[in-house]
Image (cartoon, rainbow, N blue to C red; front, top):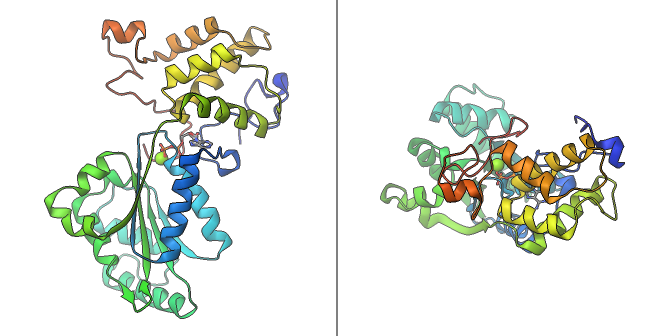
Amino acid sequence: MQNAIYNAYFGFVENPFNISPDPEFLYRSPQHEEALANLIYGVRSRKGFIVLTGEVGTGKTTMLECLRDYLDSQRTEFAFIFNSRLTPDQFFEMMAFDFELQCDRKSKTDVLFALNALLIQQAERGRTCVLIVDEAHNLEWEVLEEIRLLGNLENRQGKLLQIILAGQPELDRKLDAPDLRQLKQRIVLRCTLNPLTPDESAAYIETRLARAGMTKQTVFGPEVLEEIYKRSRGIPRLINLLCDNLLVTAFAMEQRTTTIEMLNEVCQDLRLEWPGSNRDRRGRSSRYGMEEPYPQTPLSLRGD
Ligand SMILES: Nc1ncnc2c1ncn2[C@@H]1O[C@H](COP(=O)(O)OP(=O)(O)O)[C@@H](O)[C@H]1O
Ligand SMILES: [Mg+2]
């Protein structure tokens, strides 16, 4: 992991606001806790389809990474597909690759045979298998239809393959389409991630700082914390972006604490808009504005 330039200055052992979906930095808000519990429950109860939705940056991939850790700890076989702009053929190939199926991965028939064999073998051991698809709002209809068919595989104990679809709110809308009615009927669990509340946002920042080595934080005062919440609208990814930039600014100015002025400068540099900001009032378009409210940072690991 790359070190932030300010780590030594503030005494961090790791980057507090890295943008990667790292479960080590997990902040357990009640809704994140509930989402993870739901994902685990859904897999364990073997009911089939689970859908996780939320705006960009609310923590979906982070939750999936936590689920991945859980599945690893249970030695449950899973495939994690995070590139969802795929043709059906590519989808089968990627799934075969991730499940490490020994077959001609370019042949759908072969992949289905090998998958079936894996599912049955695992079921005989009392285990299930999981297919996780992130950024599922991007999936083509044809691929969604193939995924629906995979959900049919079952024995007397229940579905053999648990399928988790995670994506932006368009996913819900997509699943509402008449063509996908059959898939929609199969969804047994839905969870949604919403932005953090003001208190959660402050606790989130403190959790990340503590994890990075600063147990009693003094860098962000109450006013700054409140403004970070307002300007990020409680979206973890934006909170990270603002905090990281604030720390860079404080470091450059050789200051131990951050200020509203620094935050203004950061927001201007990022061309960030938030409800009530000048830019927003003037209705100018901006990179992180209301029309395209979430930043695409080069550090982002996955998808969007
Ligand atoms: N509950 C959480 N605890 C710690 N960090 C989080 C949490 N939720 C989101 N984040 C952070 O916010 C950023 C965006 O999260 P991510 O899971 O990539 O969102 P999404 O997949 O919904 O776009 C990441 O840097 C991630 O580390
Ligand atoms: Mg994501």
